[in-house]
Image (cartoon, rainbow, N blue to C red; front, side, top):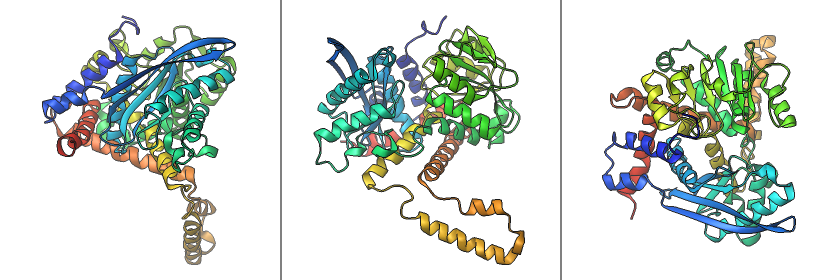
Length: 471
């Protein structure tokens, strides 16, 4: 079975949800409610491209509004459809709940390939789509806050924010209508790297727990671990870069749309990324073996597999051939429900997407609160913290004399700038969430894996609202 013959992404999300919700005491009616999206908006609009009108089709789905605003990315891709958008919106609800970020779940998509359009035409398309979303309340700092996803980035978010601000000049919180903006337009340092950084923090926290590492039949520590990464987009690039440069991982394989690269000595992620950006693919990269059938590297002999590309890449047809003992879902839904069951029976450990992929929405929350506060993080406290650090250093110097190490001084006076604060907050969020997930995993005999535990944690938080407080 090939990757395009498996059941739909929504099928997988529903099946995984049903498996988990059957292990909770959620009332049947509420369980049914959380199994479907509350609203789906489909829109068609026309844009004049090079003298001719083209019609574009898009969606915005809201799964839950138990907390407002509802939050979720917007992707531009040819494979976008309503089924996918609804599945991603549901996953977003549970993702926010797992890391305890106070958002509901939403998702949007526009059916097009951004590479087919000039920058000016894509800007026009983006602005038109933003206008259609705003008309129905799907672009609003209080109700629905989009973010970047596949095929979109800071530029598209800035254009959408400009549309909202133009329509609502009286709204002093207009910048909070969308996240993932450039820093000069109210964005936040660290948002671009956030999802990849969150993947790294998730893996670091996993390896702090010897019991979990033993369950994956892996030796302790990330240093020296052999890793294969699928997808060197924003998420995969940052995750692979940080794992290589900061944790000592060996990136043996990288899979892209035009094939894969392999090196027993390890690939230089920065070098591969630069080649990919310049050439549009990895074929021809000089310092590695090129593999035409890139997806075959999903089955390569490695310790950790990081699928960071599309949904349903590990499916019923290749799950039996996966060699990695630990699979970290950096993408949304890279493992189908059928493959999930096969891998679980084979003793493979999966760090699930709703947790591993949550770095982006966590830092989006930081950006949203920064926009509402109208103040840069660290603005008020930086000088005070530096002064306190200087006082501590002076006291230590008096006690130690010339023996006080200069490198230790650098650590003391490290600025509490926005990027460091964002990284600190993200790391704390990822660590705390993993500990809550693993507590459920290890304390209950009917919870076989981290994914089910994550769903149970999320369902409990969202379900509590609907059973106790909803009208």
